[in-house]
Image 1: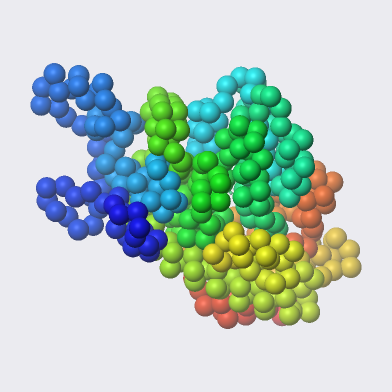
Image 2: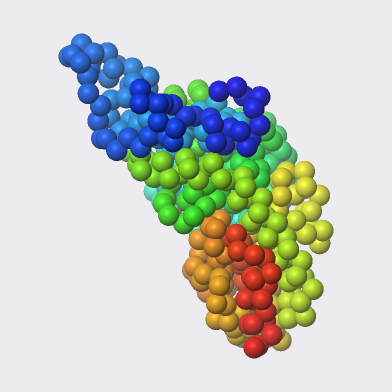
Length: 397
Ligand SMILES: *Cc1c(COP(=O)(O)O)cnc(C)c1O
């Protein structure tokens, strides 16, 4: 499809392939394999399995439609979809690295990503140096001759700290390392890392791309050469493939992504501003607020602040802070007490006792995850209703 079309048009039109029935909505191909008219045709199609449909672990038309649409939205040449965000990370590491190789990664990572890098890949001889995402010298100094990959997630979870994609990309390039950006927190509607110098965009499509809390999915977007010659052979053989059903759900998710992201960001900004004025709130972390230390970078790098707001409630001691934070959670009647994000329904979590409870108290303190910190991932409810929902706990009503 014409690459000069705007994002909103690509989101509903790109990637669509119609069958002879001329269906308007994309067809869902729930089939594990595809038939051939002769032995010779089967032989030919298996030989060129990237160009033909043979078996759904390799390729499936519904999955291809999702891949092509997401590639168009990220501005990449090719995409491979996977069963989850974690299997996308597994796939890029398996495709691009081997035993003895090294990677440099931001230390502000999704918990399971941190676990894979520090406990699973190490068993196969792939090591990682973790750095402060904002210390550019640390990225430079961590590079070794065997460094093959840079990995970053921005904004960070839960404190919404940003990493400068363009600046880190230049260091990766000088080091000859592949630069992977986990774009799950923003989605292409808010941030397009490939345009800022990333080589690969990785997604947990489970988050904003589905956006309705229904299915798991993941994806990798990058150059045709990397995706088709390195990632595709791994996914095709190892099988962390996205199911056709989930691809269809995610394809439909992409159609409304930009509208949802825009409204969720607007809601997040409104709630963040309200929280900033509230006497029971000590601090608010949101990239769309002028008070965010990296507001200028956020304006440059992101189209909006995104859906996630973190805030710290007051309290004289850590115990009092935790009590106040829990009171906010327990006082809600609308917000869902769950760790998903990017959903149409607002979610609230207490990171220090849930998502970040397994790291040591010292590491938590260093990361700024206090007992009073709450993470809110805004949905599509009216922002005023969410403020009222939070006010109950904040005001001890
Ligand atoms: C959820 C998430 C993942 C993991 O994705 P799954 O789809 O749960 O496997 C990775 N990175 C980030 C930033 C996430 O939020």
